[in-house]
Image 1 (cartoon, one colour):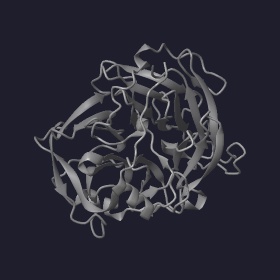
Image 2 (cartoon, one colour):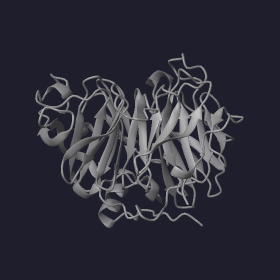
Image 3 (cartoon, helix red, strand yellow):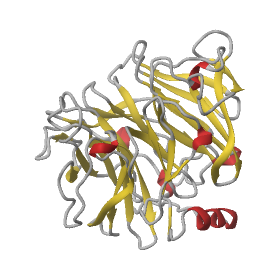
Image 4 (cartoon, helix red, strand yellow):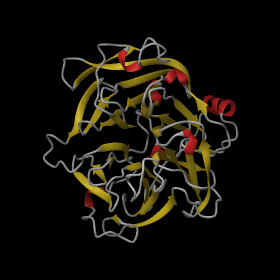
Length: 404
């Protein structure tokens, strides 16, 4: 039975914003990739098959261990041309997302966690409606250590710089308009962003040992150019509890690091991936191997998974994550067993794929195509994990019955 999915029709106010800031975009973002915390309208339109998948089999010709009935292909390799596009794929592929095009195809965007002198920024691979690769190109350049990021409901990619002077860059996945920096979202070691469109909130993680959990309240719908940056304080003294949001005095961090400006704010041990689904903001902290869940309605923060206390601690090195329309939280490992592990809506942990022979690498950028039958991700440093420039990075596509 075909999988149902929804695209987002950009409303007139957002269309005016896009026409002003990113002229020439003739596409919509996939409903499967909708990163807002309000109900996205498709939570009940698909049924997850993940809990029914069998164990991972022996490695295939691409070195991936997959469940029965799944196949893989290599989409791109760092330093090599993507198909016949003429575009050489970037080093160290990191955070990624999928966007639907108006011809029935889709685009997979990917960050490059290197420095500007050897690339960095972000690139994109464009697919036809049958899954063939038809183009590849750059969408962001001149930036540094572009780690993860996030998608917006109005159809742009937010690329995050993971360094002390890092900022958020809003990008056109078609590559037709120049990326725009969003300084009001703060200067700090950005990791990832998730948009709560209903409340005009952008939630952000910070990848340092005492990083913070941030919220940017943007002034106008579909416009991240202005707003107030806030930081979370978890009340009660424990890791879980009610969150109160404090205003950051100076988002530019001209004199004091952003995370240190509100002394009462709560530190988190290495913030990583973040995603919004039906009112819940999920994010990971790699330093303590935890997955968190923040309820935007009640302002309560709880721990969804903790490797130190879990009865099935198969997930370690938690990093990039995404959430399916059915509520499965897919977490990519940085190290660990080099797996993508699903935390199902029922709370069961199941490995979906394992990359073999890449022991010193990390899995990055998990994202589904519009049909929910293809999963994209990368091994950032590939089999040569000791290379800090990620010149052996590989981007994959895994196809199979994730949903029915």
